[in-house]
Image (cartoon, rainbow, N blue to C red; front, top):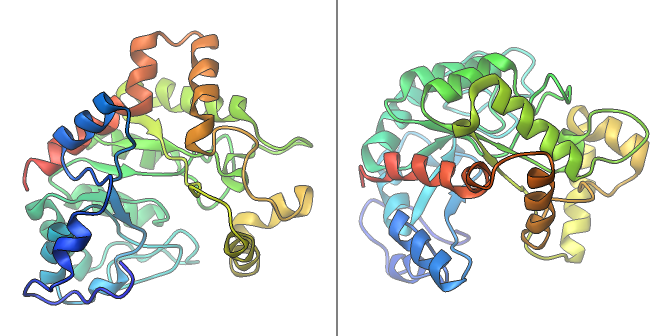
Length: 287
């Protein structure tokens, strides 16, 4: 998305972005990628702030191939409050308008990083299932980035799902050891027991590759969001990833851990993708 200007009319760059290698903007594209052994890329953005009051930009995003849009990041924006705002003012009037537009064009509303009141009001405002793409139950891992039971239930009631996340600071349940795949499974089990197998998925929140820029990013997060990472960094140092289940290459470890814990193969398939595909089909059919 770098360098793309979201004007109302199409720009010359739109076809190039829409044809991004591996892009999977429809359920059928996802199935084709799976059948051919390829990774299908679903474009999602991690803040809606750049839309401003120009709601026509939502439709431009859809035409660029964006299929998931996160309402807020950790801070307040025009649409609602992030999870680190000390007073959660909830969904704004403009936020309700942007959710209507997202529903209309067929982009999934993602409430990762949103404050509790903002998330609950956004779910109520949406006519279609909402997701939280990467977070864990706060009851197991007390962290402002994680979700209360009320939010998890509301997401499930909307028909959506929570993507359990292996990122260290929000996966860590306390104690002397860094989180492992077993902690990820524990978060999955908690959500299954709370709202059912249909409403849980996996949201890795991990980079596809490592670079010096990633180390700088980790340092920036430490400085900017001590409420989220401070305890974890104090215990384990700068490395923010959980040891397992944080990359595509380690998904087989999570698959085996779920099977070892007694999940039937059909339920493992739901967790690893079919639940998300169900939500995508429900929302993207508006496209």
